[in-house]
Image 1 (cartoon, rainbow, N blue to C red):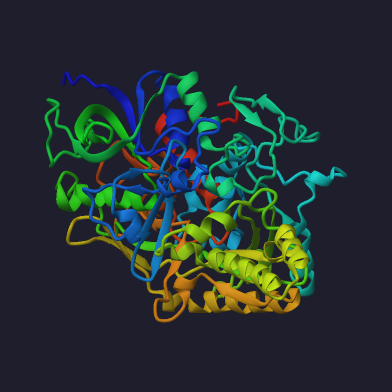
Image 2: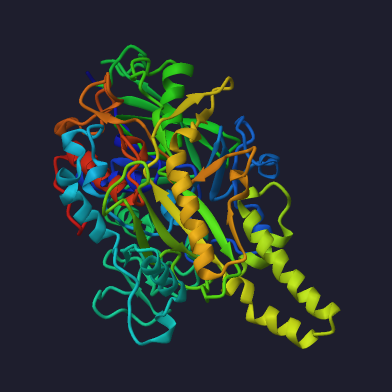
Length: 574
């Protein structure tokens, strides 16, 4: 055998699993690991905020035939927000160097023990994952929002949600969030002051702008490009390619030729498209591949290799099974009589437990988290074109504010009208309720007739969870004196379509291929059954919903995948 390998490993996708594995594998093989990321780099200050910039910050490739909102699907854009429309569920995923970490809400939270039921092999249960939870938590700098006497650190909605929890007979706690408040955990750096983090990347002590979910222009969010990826590139010379789309994985034979019957022991040729060069195709040869394109991307890539290109025909037929939206449910309580100020602070600060961590009830278990949106959202959303149903609640809020202002003018109460507008009472007293919980994890991912991923979500099977969340939302409205409780409009009849930002499953960890797609054995953890050196490391590995924000568990599993590949126990020094 005399195969010339371009790389020891190629990683496809730079979300949590891809970034962790790029860093860990590059430490083992410096200069011999390549990362392929479809999205752009986003250096400090580069996330768009203008109406035009925001309108162009969605993801769409014209050669692909996917269901998206019409005004997104009309042109090719390589933006950060990738919105997919499926059957009874829509999904939002991030595209960019750092994947979903660029737009997630920062929470690092271990699920309760009860989540890890018989669907989870012993090697992937909570107790076995503790060392990996601990390491990734330290790397990501997870900590609660600092408390203190500085009035700028007072987040009003935190107290509001804590008061509601008490009134509703529930427990609330500050959550660990991956946000930079300085390197000293005991003495936070002053708001807005810049310093290099422990890995040498420049960050800003959080400015409380509530823009976490749109990309942090001050680099106050501990996104992956500022830790794992930063170290992989600057310390271990990982080759990071952006705006390239992983397309096909082909196993090689002993002579280095492509052989669809091979099982990976001689490596793979990986093909990708250069999105800035007319989708021109390129390829490289590698000993091993880590697929970390996110749940939707990883399932689709492996399905296309199995069923369209026929290059990986032996992947388990369990591929695509057990899809979960992690019980995500977003809703709004409009115009209460208690201040909420949802335009200030990190996007999430606290969590209220509803039968998830205490008195676990699988049919009704969820967590309620406070959420925020940036100040400019109320102004921009009024001018958005029809079709952005997920912004409709904000549009209603803006319209109500304008109506109140106009009513004051027509009644001759101009001073009152301007006062109401300047105070922003409507937004100031409205709350964003972000919930996630234990759904049934029984969705199905499959390829449509054009060869692109489609998800079928049997929402009725998870109605006990959704109804429990709706009941809580109505209680919140009554308690806060809100004028309306509004789930996302696409939840209303006859659509009954939810939206998730936590797509999970499809490449389930298991003890054998009759139960799942990837190996749960310690020495081959995350390896695709039937293929040596082909791994999955992202949310697709999760056997079920976890109820809690899934980032911590994805990180722990991905650290375990990397340890199995490299043989090196992970540490937080990277």
